Length: 127
Image (cartoon, rainbow, N blue to C red; front, side, top):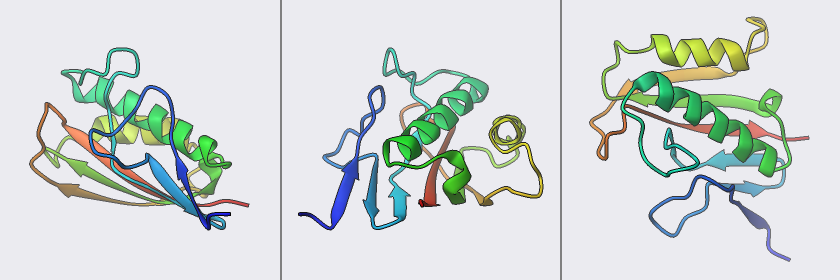
């Protein structure tokens, strides 16, 4: 039996031959999570729509790995324009409403291709 398990979800696939996330024991680490539309595979034009999709993909990936969003301990966010945190914060507060029980988060600026304005990765400790 393999020690590492690859996690895949429907509606979000990487262009390269890598899984959405990987899990060993109770530790799950995602690859990059983009805000592509799960139905069309296209990148929405607005950062707001990309954030909605990105957070939905993040939730689905953690759940496919056997956890919940309560298991997320760290999230790193990359923004095309670091001043555009408001759409990230709006989805963040929806997913993690209790300010006493939120994951750590770090935001960085990065030039992105393919129309991406935001992307993230997560670390979760499950069980």
